[in-house]
Amino acid sequence: MSERALRIGLPILVLVLGLLVWDLVVRAFAIPPFVLPSPGLVLSTLIADGGLLWQSLLVTLATTFEGFLLAAVGGIGLAILFSQSRLVEYSLYPYAVILQVTPIVAIAPLLLIYLPQPLAVLACAWIVAFFPVLANTTLGLSSVDHNLIALFELYKASRWQLLWNLKLPSALPQMLAGLRIAGGLSLIGAVVAEIAAGSAGAGSGLAYRIAESGYRLNIPRMFAALLLLSLAGIAIFFALSALSHLALRRWHESAVKRER
Amino acid sequence: MSTPGSDIVSLRNVGKTFERGTVALDGLSLAVRDGEFVSLLGPSGCGKSTALRIIAGLSAPSTGVVEGPAGKIGFVFQEPTLMPWADVAANVRLPLKLSHKDDAQSHAAVRQALARVGLADFANAFPRELSGGMKMRTSIARALVTEPQLLLMDEPFAALDEITRFKLNNDLLTLWQALRRTVIFVTHSVFESVYLSQRIVLMTPRPGRVFAEIAIPAPYPRDEHFRTSPEYAGYCRQVAEALGQAMGGAP
Image (tube, rainbow over all chains, first blue to last red; front, side):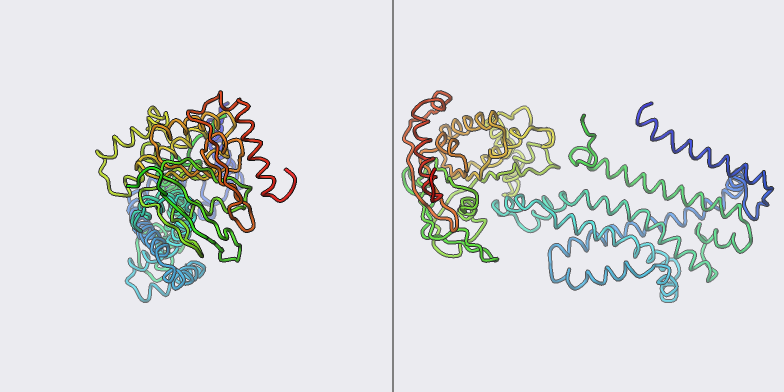
């Protein structure tokens, strides 16, 4: 069997086995659906509640996407600013770290007090997602080949030329790695904020549906919503991996197939 | 434009002390004439690369005076120093792009530079697809694309295998004779410096300064015959002995 077939086939096999065991356990011990629904029930709930859950998914995804976009722009922008001015870097970097290390679950309720709810959710998605973009891009911008910098100096390149023609392309692999992490994190940020907001009695995102279903002991719908969230996370990860691969496939070792 | 025979660059009593207190150069004096092929030869740590970077303006001397070079400079590093995200043509075009030449103007210059180093068919290859020798050729093409008066080369072939190095030595001499630019070539190989240069500047370490200057009056073109001639072996022995003295011990 080829390497590729194994990489795709084995996880699917594990999934099928897992579902079988799950289903068998539910049947064998006659576990009621409000404790643990069978995989089949989760699937049929997903279909039956499809319209409602789909609407909620779109809300959550919109927040995630906006948070991600802001994180990308903010993270890359701030990293560029840092690379241009040491003073700005020294002044602001510690606060970026503080923003990152303070647990988002603890910040969300505060944000919900000060900001209108959709904006607070967006702010949460942004806060958790922007740091990996900032940290990785900063690393990339500061690890440019010194001889290439000397070459640009020799030809009297302007700061702008140095940034655009050398530093940014050179930092692209790290930048994309940061974005790939940020994609998953912005979904987490959106979910955390929605749950915090949901307990305050507002919201219509997927995480809010999970919280709401929990109060109503609608466990199959909780599972269905959770499944959708996971699928959304997987889709985001693959989309960003594909983007990274497309951008780097011609030149970066990480994306080039090794010849044997 | 300098006339042939006049100095294109001269260093007088140049010293360089790095921030951490290392004295790389002390009292280095050196003049290079227009059109000349000069090698800076010495053991590692003798400041020959530092001297080259000072000539290029990449590093400022702590003491002393540097005059010139007036015209354009091409620089070839020890590593090929190519941008991995750009293909060969884009790498060679870089100096023109940085001086805001438009694509149409650059195109012909890039093609000519690539043809000179024998890479005309590899314009669209990426650096990672090239061998070590071809990467170095790309680097040389990039240095030549602005048609510089002065070509500075910092141990460009040190990391290559001997077969590739000999080939590139021959090609470099052919280019030098065709273009008649000034070349300052840094190396730690006695054999390479004798083969290539009209004049060898022997440097000693700690601190870096000129120990001796040795002329190699053998006529050009120099080729494989020269490389295996007794004359060549004689020059090599002479330079190796001088190097031995410079190192302060028996050769």
